[in-house]
Image 1 (cartoon, rainbow, N blue to C red):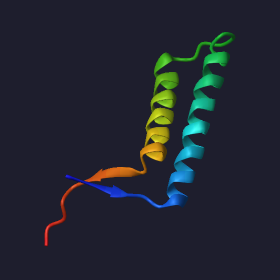
Image 2 (image 1 turned 30 degrees about the vertical axis):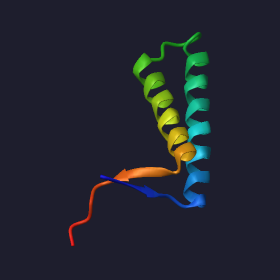
Image 3 (image 1 turned 180 degrees about the vertical axis):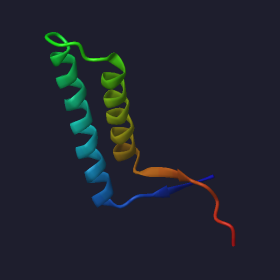
Length: 68
């Protein structure tokens, strides 16, 4: 497996998506104080934020080797 670099524009969008996902997780946590919000929704939003943020930080993604 080879680590392919991603463009700056994609990194910027991943950073925005990561921040947005953390914001959604925080909002769902706050909303859970009043209503009943299932914990998997909060967990998935937090994990998506972590994945997008780490992709924006590292700037590379694992890609399988191409067959020639």
